[in-house]
Amino acid sequence: QDVHKPDEHDSLNNIGHTGNKRRRHQEYGVQTTAEMVSLIQDFFESREKELTEREAALEKRMKLLEDQSPPVGKDNDVLRLNVGGKTKVTVMRGILTHFENSMLASRFSGRWDDSLEKDKDGIFFIDQEPSLFMALLKHLRQCNHNTRQDIAIKPSHPTF
Image (cartoon, rainbow, N blue to C red):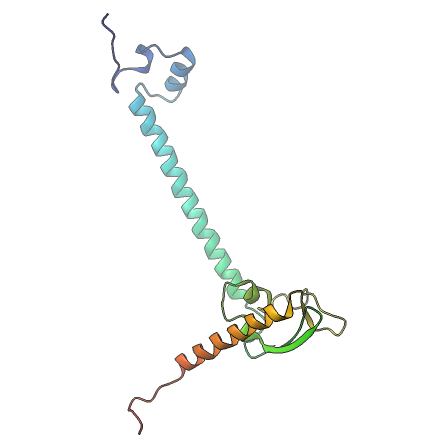
């Protein structure tokens, strides 16, 4: 038997596809599979471009919003914390916000101070095991201390 094997230049109308497919291809003005693939690629490329533009516009609006409403807290604000109802500690806001994208930095940025949980004395309440939180706080203080030393102005000439 001699069987015809269609190639990309064969018309979809001539290779035995169902009438529905033929009508769909004709509706879009294409005759070959290659033309349909090209049409689909163009569609996705235009959607990708549109989404990229929308994403850029959203990022621009978010930046504008951040610039218009900066955090109300300052690094040298002194915060009192009640950890687990057992330990009270005083810490500078800059210690808790040292790592910018952390949960602590977000929570204690100053934007949410009015809505954070507080104990009956108005002290910020941290519902964590005190020993674990204090170890974390010790680490954050050390990181902050090391960063300040790195920033300190070093003499240009060695001193003896």
